[in-house]
Length: 275
Image (tube, rainbow, N blue to C red; front, side):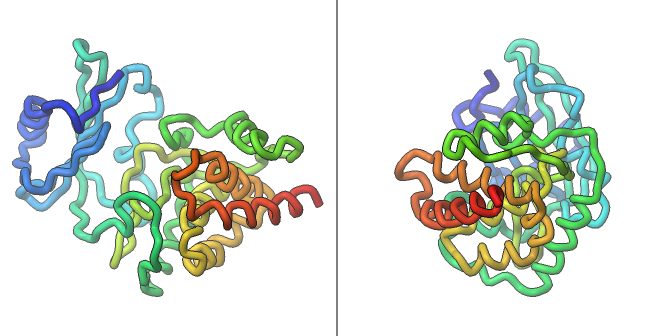
């Protein structure tokens, strides 16, 4: 199992990456998560460091690098990367240097509970990015929460609560696969953290952001209006129900404020899907 980077010293790793990229990091800028680190460099770029178990190193490549080919999507520009295998730990280390985005995440963690006050230009950039992303092609498979999106995953999640629903997905599109308010910035709209992007059921991103906005109903309504063409497709309705089912399967005390609207929309979707 890869180390929890919040709990171990990574000084040798960081030093090696600085030397490989010929970059100096600003230690005050450090962002430390379970499987990634981030630093601003003194030349005005950003370096993201990730660790993966070797079992998760597959033909999909690395998300940030592969997302560099996306056209018309508001992503940080990718500059260069470096990777190596650590046989002692049984992991691979990877560092990517990208454009430094100074805009901050809309909600760095937890549930968004108030309207973020996004401008019309923000929504225009967001909608254009979503349209262009969905029209892209890739051999990657989306891996939200480190697990591939498959028909079986969609069906099993929904059937835990709603066993009689037809869950067959007929449309697949390129998706960010972790589209949440923590990975969207303001006042300018950028989409961050591309490690899980790939093909997913149509409307996956739209339904995820919509459902994660339930604590602010007017925001959820705006997301729905912006991405209505995907959400109201046959597959989009299935994916809406999937994300509602995920919320309803959460343990008590985890995002309880999302549950009432998840129940309400699940009832609506069940009626529509059974019609």
